[in-house]
Image 1 (cartoon, one colour):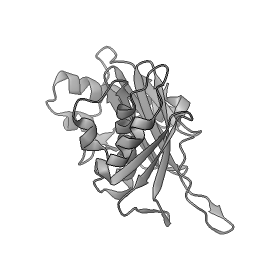
Image 2 (cartoon, rainbow, N blue to C red):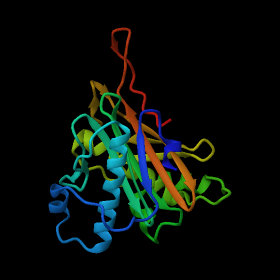
Image 3 (spheres, rainbow, N blue to C red):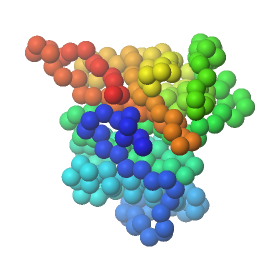
Length: 235
């Protein structure tokens, strides 16, 4: 499903729910998981099964994916990736670091945010734009999509900066017809290979009761012997 909003060179693997017990974790992953409750263990294990399948798609041997200080997955050298899980859905996407600087994905149930959450995670300008978005068929809960897009922005941002990004540190604009969104960073942006990163762009999808968002930040190619503009597209 999510492969429909991913660009060439990004491999994905997904599961709708958790398979039967029996998937073995690497010792490093077991230590990171510790005495987690069953729900957490199943999510953790299934999303790593997805990661191993995506690694195989890149021609790599299975390798451990251990959480970092903020729970972010730490990928093998030469690989960038992102993971997500929500009710009955787990997914991992990977790409070669020679082609992509960072990836960020998120999946959410296509339902309204709990009361009070939108005000906590959005800016006044974003709430105004949400109210102007058209009704869709099948319905799209734009508030939840906004939340998902911000999650994908954070997952793209953090590996590059190792800095926290609050929900109100980026403003999202959603294209309801083209299946795309853009994020304008409101904080000092890092330079990627010497090119400032002020905006990110991605794609979104509403399907089978889920909202998925994805950002793929490509390695900027030199143009005329100099670095060209950073194109941050998710298509």
